[in-house]
Length: 72
Image (cartoon, rainbow, N blue to C red):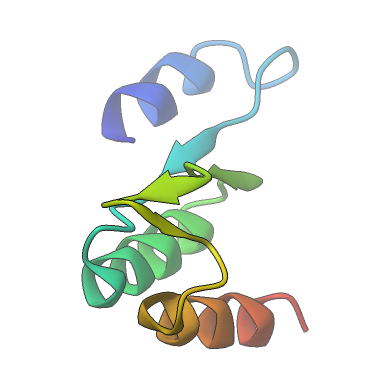
């Protein structure tokens, strides 16, 4: 994410950063999501399958709650 931010800063009128979060650890994913949003990232890329679990698995509930809060 830091490299993406650095690249986009070189031409902010042409590029905006979209980051990635480590969904295999929802706690760290929330932390990184908050960090990159505070730095002006406009979106987050996530995988549709993490450790053989789909995105509706209860493991990801902390991430979805935090994402919903950040969206308001």
